Image (cartoon, rainbow, N blue to C red; front, side, top):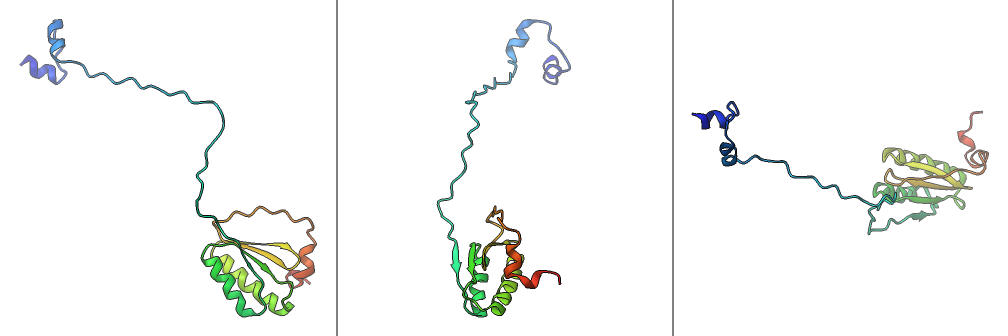
Length: 143
């Protein structure tokens, strides 16, 4: 009966002989490996490089190519320098909607040159001249 009570933990044996029969389970020592105190973090590298597509549309139909690249999660540089202004406005409207639909961003990076990036691409850009937007995108200003 003492064995039953002892196995349940309700009875403490008096002799040291009983304790030797039932070895105690001890927690193993946790060894902490000391690492170097450098603040270097290895970043996983992506073996597949990302391509940036450059498109120079001449008609509104070419805007579909830009939308296809954005749907495939590829950033696109759109050069509208040789595009008619009315067509360029329609293309920018279409591309802006596509960029919004894929949760991306669109940035003006030059005179009539835009960078459209899907949400998997982080774009950091600070324009040098804030008035540069008003030269080409005159339709966006409040008159």
